[in-house]
Length: 507
Image (cartoon, rainbow, N blue to C red; front, top):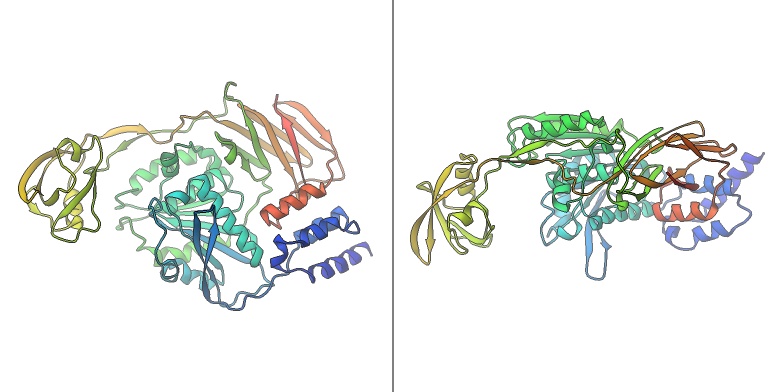
């Protein structure tokens, strides 16, 4: 009888609300209605299913996320033809490459319409979103990551998104960004699919360390190609091997005969989407390893690091996974003037200490030959450069003030450096739970938070927490109505509606 009455209450309340009510007064009304018990409120929010059918489907919608007074980040949402608001729908997020530019993509809808992922989203009746990034909203800085999170929550407020089936992929910088999110902010996602990316890019750009054992917490499906001039498979294999040594949950695949291009999409995307169908988010995993040097990246699923103490010695199990890699990239060390359309390549800027700088190349020089071979444009110049390796000598014939001159140069020798940046000290936690018992081991961490959900434990009996071999908590934990409501309003995550949290010192 009690379950029957609860079902009646649930149906009557959901019939009164719509997606637009998420950010208005309906949450407060539910919270304030004392006739609704904490258990019933949890059930109502966890089963939220009342959404309005959009006026059109099979459409591309250009939306904006207002980040601050001067910055609005565009993103394109594709709503599939057979989208039905009563059915939970998977969401795919595709991150584009070239994210370090000043301006956003000029034609975002056209970009989305022509993207390979759209075709497969249509076939599977999935929603796909194309965030547009620039240097201020790069996939690996805090602003960019928070921008992506906000876009997800905006979508959840209007569409019936399956919380446990949100996937993220991308090519080049988008692939590197997918790695960076898996390493730092995996909570929203079921799995990650980086294409022609590199694990270390986000860390190299931001100088924020990343920790390969964090890849244990989500499935990563990575693809690289052998002739990629930026992130060749040969170099990527070493990262993959190191990641697997760190117990990463990772599948790695290669295509040969392709450069830094997504020309293998027609062959790979059917396989990739089929793989997505097998992956659902398990945010209640009984084991978590999480490591970070920044509290902004301190949370993974039900565990959060809230205080790092770098004065403490690391435990023996906090292993630094790193390797020395060779920088074999061949670069002149200049920026070309992209607006220049005449013969040759005009120089707009010289990188200090580069081969171009050492040989005396100057701004506004126009390169017309390399090693005596005509170089009619930047494309031809890059083609000629591709025959060289580190340490090779070369000549450039340039026009300077309408006078032709030849400059002698040499590419720098191969240099070796650490693959991952560990300039900041980190804290790490190994955590597991079974029944109502949590076993926590910490390294250079002095405070943590455990988030509680009825699917994880039995709220009718005590939760027991042991940290570093010492029992520090043994109590019954009830639903905190205020915390639950605020959590729902913040994350709009029906499947992970935390009902309380336990804050614990580790020493």
